[in-house]
Every structure is written in C-alpha cells, then in structure tokens.
Picture 1 (cartoon, rainbow, N blue to C red):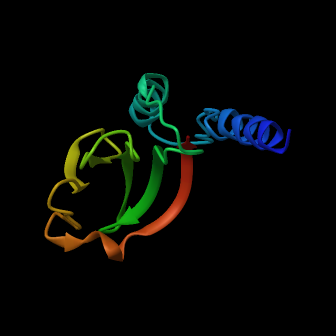
Picture 2: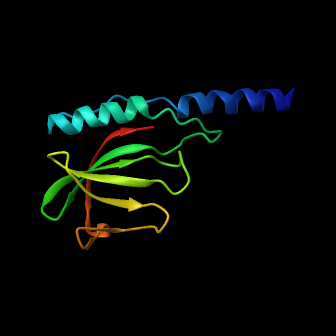
Length: 119
C-alpha cells in the first residue's frame, strides 16, 4: 500500500511538473512572442523526470535584449538558440562542445531579465 501511494504521489507531481505555462510577454518584439509560442507548442518532449527544463528567457547582453530558446534536456547535447529582438540568430549556447560564447563574449556576462516560458 505504501508503494502504491508513493507511485500515485510521484505520478501526480510528474504531471504537474510538465504543465506548459503561458507565454508572459507584457511588452516586447512580436516576432519573439510568436517564436516563443511556437517553441512552447512544439516542445512535446516527454521524459520520466519531473521537469525537462525547456524555457525561453530574456537577457541583457552586449547592451541589448536577447532571447535564449533552451530545449532543456529533451535531446542529448542540443544547443540553445540565442536571438536578438529582430529574431536574428546571433549564436548558440551549450551543445556538444558546451559553448558559452556569443558574438565573441562570454554569455556569463548576460543579465537575466525574465522568463517568458518554462516547462
């Protein structure tokens, strides 16, 4: 009986942890909002863990706002796409080589502004 209750509790947490949140762009570029919505809808990664970590986040980097589309742990060594406010790709983070550089600067200098969506 204890095992059944434990499995039931973990299963419930698993479903709650995979809930897709609404895109929360109070103000911002239309193209980023549209891409974020497409990313959120298309991110159907299934996993046995409670959360997969996929997200869209806004950062201040190199004196401008940029947006990181992170697939989380949906795939082995997938890179996170970094877009500017015009939806132009300016680089990729992570991936097989663990890249942390965008436009010649370490992304560690980036300041997180907000999370637009997270799974």
